[in-house]
Length: 220
Image 1 (tube, rainbow, N blue to C red):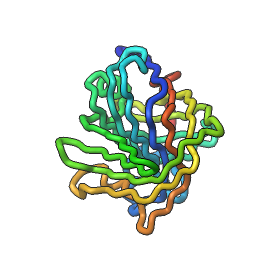
Image 2: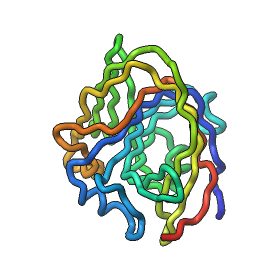
Image 3: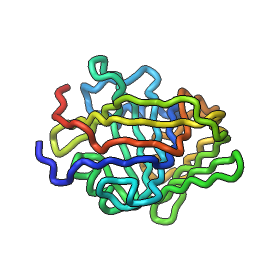
């Protein structure tokens, strides 16, 4: 498999990362190619993150990004996900995603913290798409580490990348609301159910990961 854009390492970015049960499970299922199994609840993941300095990367600019899509249920692959959307403020990061089949667009993500109040906003073309509010603490008492597999489509082929990560989540942590603000934008199909049914999540001011990790074609 060719790699016109080399893999990248990102260290100590600020990341909000969580998952939920969607409002429209059938719309979520329609995003995934036939043959890829989904959990019964059609659960969705969201990453909103900010890389404040280019020195936190092996070859990218400082940038912000939001990624989201359905989780998959691949018994032989551990945790796996379908990348439905990737919105980034950096042309380099967009190119890095696009050459691997990830639907990459231009967007901007901000994470603002005042005291214990966190507000993360994803926007595109000056329009706010997603706004997350949370309550966070400052204590880090554990580390999440491991690998997650992301799948996408490159032409007629499915591709997969296994990405290593190390996250340092803070406690306490509580999501207060997740708002999808633009019904006309494609990300709206992934909005959470009302009332909100969160499945997992964290905020980490020190999140490190590789893009894309090991790669290969996928057979369904």
